[in-house]
Length: 129
Image (cartoon, rainbow, N blue to C red; front, side):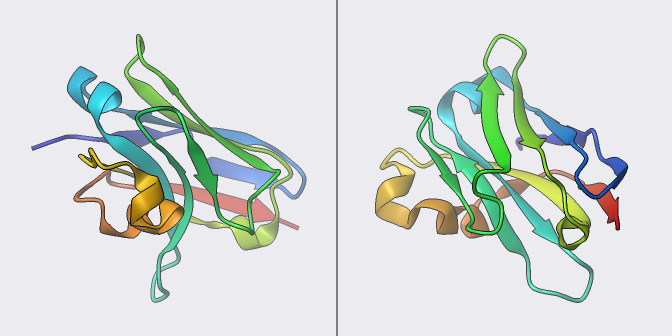
């Protein structure tokens, strides 16, 4: 079973930045599509960003232009750089991954994150106004 470990959450003021990290196996970082979703307890999860194995990226409308997803293959780590944070970005952020050889574009792009089989334990992000 694939193990994903998030880190980097915390508390910031509105307008601030955070970088989340997701440590994965070498196999996952090279062969899996990966992404981030967030969830406030009691609410439906929201896919935030995804990165395909070819490096193609997808973003939710609410974070486009503010968040950047990336991967560092030698470090076996995926990142989510979050700039211009807003109070409504406060949530638990989860890293997710799965094997999608057909590519994410035929699976709805960002929507595919909702069906990834591997997720981490989550990291809390709190943005104060």
